[in-house]
Length: 466
Ligand code: PM9
Image 1 (tube, rainbow, N blue to C red):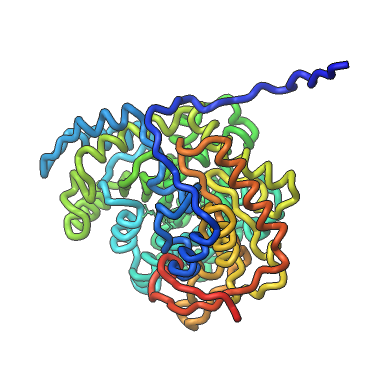
Image 2: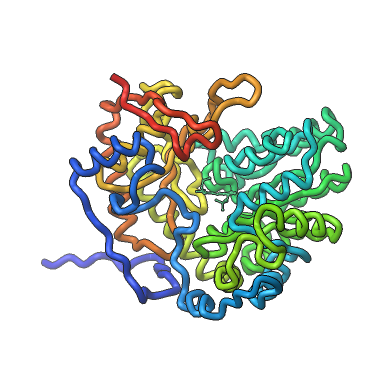
């Protein structure tokens, strides 16, 4: 007799868009990939994109723009000064993020550069909820040093706390007491926290950080790169917020800060762009003056008019609840598959990526044999899926001692571009991870053969250990 499957208990969601343009993908042989990986010095940043099948290197600038964004590109007002698109962008930063003033920058690190130069004096300490590579480097280049005040749970891949991006408030208070509020130019809040696995910070914790900073007369600057994703986690996980829209949560969250740096290449759904925003008029004057030195006039910064238009439109699209549910839903889909197969990943699953725990994959490799770098290489070799190391190589060297920093998290990031891949691509990627996991006992470490001075993970080269 024919048996019938039980009807599904829950209803599925689907992406709130359909595909209008497609870009062909190339599959390659293992031999082709072996040569490509060797030529790239076992660094996935050095692969040619045409040798990649499914590109999960980053969600930065890799998203698909909507028809409205592309239409907006034709509305680019390429005047040197006072472009119409600048004013629309400014209005949307005000409306959705709530900051009064804004200077456009070519991308997030342009904004970090300006902020660090304006705010930091040599010897200052900048507390934050875990480092980010470019953010910390700009703080250091300005003479400051970053102090990690994230909750200890963030350093444990297996800890399932819902808000692993939260500050350890006692650690923040301690730092301010130890160095004195005058030596803390601002608190740097990441939302979500990229290096912790795309983990959110709660509204409650953000409010508490605000209260501490206010009490000591210290400003807060938000890294708003993925703050919309953070708002979605607040809606989903934090008691009392389930009925609020992502847009209203974003605005409230930002209201506990004095300004933000932004890489528009993530949440804001564009291939290039960013901004530095603030509420203080005097600070804005300084930023507007400095931006002309490093980026361009204060009404375009590092951006073309058409790109500002696309970003203004992208901001509006980014806060739609159905968009963000599908975007993070796809990440959750991939992560859940790996969890179901017993593959060690950072828990809970983050907002923009699934992070493989390379220490648990390759417990036989020491951290200075670069297990995550090796794992990223193996993933590419298996099926052409490109990922990114987020471990000892990304952490770089200690400023004072010159020795490797040894982060507790040794991760490989499978980062999902926005509105680009289908569920079938996620299945292929998950199966490739499973195949590499099966072969985990055979993996050998790497040696670094070339190490650039800054942000070494981008350009370092490696060879397999003999
Ligand atoms: N993030 C990422 O792949 C781009 C390359 S890796 C340096 O995750 C945060 C939280 C980011 C970020 C970039 C930047 C810098 C600042 N904050 O890349 O300069 O994730 O636009 O932004 C990358 P830009």
